[in-house]
Image 1 (spheres, helix red, strand yellow):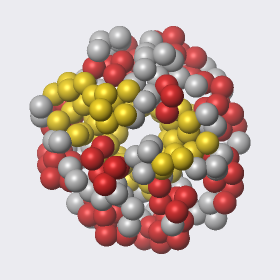
Image 2: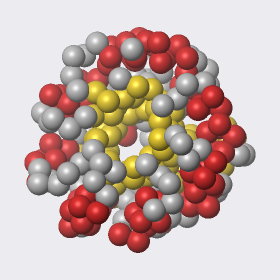
Image 3: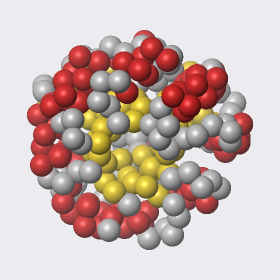
Length: 240
């Protein structure tokens, strides 16, 4: 299990939100590329970049910053989400050095796009399952649905997906602990590697996920790293 630092980008800056609410931001860096360099220097095997403005607008907005990071760290693994809703925006990133793209809204509204992308870019498509009270949300976590994560996953069983990111939105950015039970349940229900996201705020949380004996590829950490709840090096040690 690896530790994946998150870099959430809003208006070109590295920020963190609470429960994904755009009006509840904390700015941690004016220069996301500097944060990327710090995390890779401290041992990160992968970075998770999110275009927050893109997630709301439905198209890439901070792509210039993201592609600058990809160019600077072309030998490192970077996954990007936020506003990737069609073949063109997916190709924009995958043809420019981004390792993997994260798609959530399209999986619900236009699954055929995932089918085409998984054929053209095998091993590069990550499915985001962003849930609030057991139901998925889309459009940057603004729009509600009546679909449960496992139900959506079952409808996409014919699509080649590299990994799944499961986020309990109510936990994201709140430093209250991840939804371990739901994450483990999902991981036990699929052979696709799962990445846990949302609420990790202590080494105990990482230890609990690491010892859960399910197919967890990694854990995304955001506010906990930026507010020094633990260091990346400590987290990597606990995850091994």
